[in-house]
Every structure is written in C-alpha cells, then in structure tokens.
Amino acid sequence: MKKLFYLFLLATLLLSACGKNNAPKEVAVDNNTSIEDIVGVFIKNKFTVEETKGIVTISIQDTDVKKGSKSQMLKDSTKIFAELSKLEKVKTPAIIWNAPLTEPKGNDNMTEVLGIYFSEEDFRKVNWANYAQLDIESIATHYQESDALGH
Image 1 (spheres, rainbow, N blue to C red):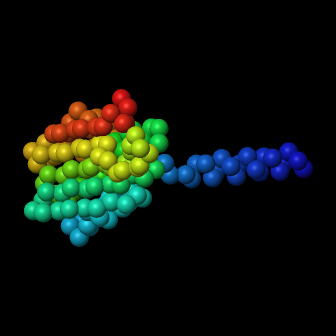
Image 2 (image 1 turned 90 degrees about the vertical axis):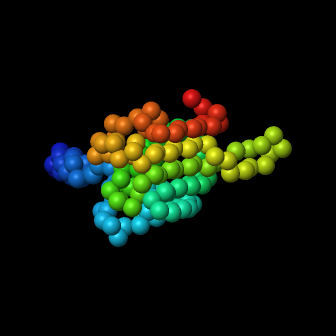
Image 3 (image 1 turned 45 degrees about the vertical axis):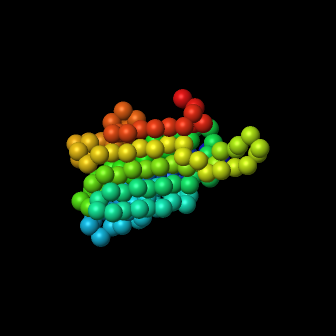
C-alpha cells in the first residue's frame, strides 16, 4: 500500500511539474495598448512614462536593489524594448533605472544607475523577436551605467 501511495505521489509531482510554464511574460500588444500597461507587466516598482511625438522615456525607481540587479535590469529592459517595438507610436525609447544610493552622511538618494537609449534607426533595425539573445549593452545607441552597479 505504501508503494502505491508513493507511486501516486511521484506521478502527481511529475504531472504538476510538466504543467509549469516558464515562458517569458509577453503582453498582448495592439495600438490601444499603453506604454504604462507594457511596463507594468515587468516592473513592480514605481515608474513614470513620458511620451511626446514618439520619444518615450521610462524612469524606474528600483527600491529593492541587491546583488545581481544589473542582470535583472538588463533583462527587464530588453523585454520592455521588445514589447515597445510592437507599438508604431514608439520611435526613440529610453529606460532610466534609479536606485537608492547611500551618501557618505548616510542619506539615501535616488540616483540614476543605468540608462539605455535607442535612436529611431537603431530601434527599428533590431530583431526584437529574439530579444532573449540580444546584448542590449552593445546594441543600444547609448548605454551608461553607474560604478555603483559594479562590472
């Protein structure tokens, strides 16, 4: 009876593991999708979006920065750019990551730690369908990171 129970438990665990979906999040994007909707899927921190005539600047306030954050910021940024590429109204996007950095006197100030910008030409020539394989640091028109992120 115990063997049957363990066999049933093992089969249940295997079936539940097979049902997990580890695919990256995607947004059903159409021309009515807002930039805020896209960013909100990937970013749980506070963020703002400024958009004027196709020039989009997304400022993210990352309050829970920890070791390995640069890698996650780059992954999230790449996913956001890939989804933004589906919107015709987005011409030149930029993402600015801000994080609290402690000053010598112990005060925490939100400071820009990562900035990624694409010109319209560069943004359109990237094959965003393969975003998981892209090295955003090298393909961005302008890439800047703070020494606070570490290299």
